[in-house]
Length: 242
Image (cartoon, rainbow, N blue to C red):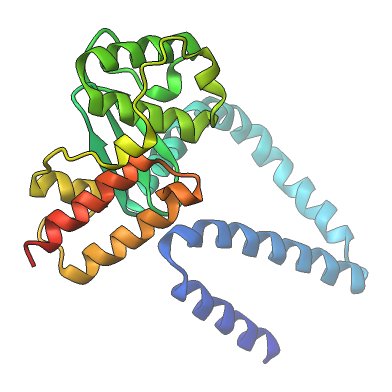
């Protein structure tokens, strides 16, 4: 009776979990079940059954082990693709783009990723660039698109803090105060992308998305004045339509 109640409670808890948390919970449940089984066998003096079971499975392991080893690369690739799909659909993401670079911010983790859109490094992920390539890209952005330069500076600040500025010998950087007063026009589509919302989101969704992003990116919390200004502009742009 106790086991029936326990299993029912675990199943009910499992069904209420978000989809992203069910995988880790299954692993923990299996480990707990295995430990419980070992403890039960030890208390009933039946640990020898584990050895007997292993002896029965040994021929099967010898038969299937080569196949498992050959399948490991495929299984690893499948697992990576599955994780990427989950991360891409598991939460809201904001997108801010200039002419040269674009950035994406995951609302849940606060992680920022970016990609080069145009120029000599087009197609490169920012995570793959080394220090000198970052400085070269920043110099190119400053020559071609101020929005991209500010975006890249925001990315570098979030990833490296102020350390990268010691190597920025050009020094042609607009102040945080000037960035905060950026007046670049936004389209509705750009505003929705910045807030990580679907086209046509209602007023409450806009306010909530703005609040979540500002908690992560406000300058008082170590964020970027430029990105905070763009988020505020996106909010104002969309609320004017409601």
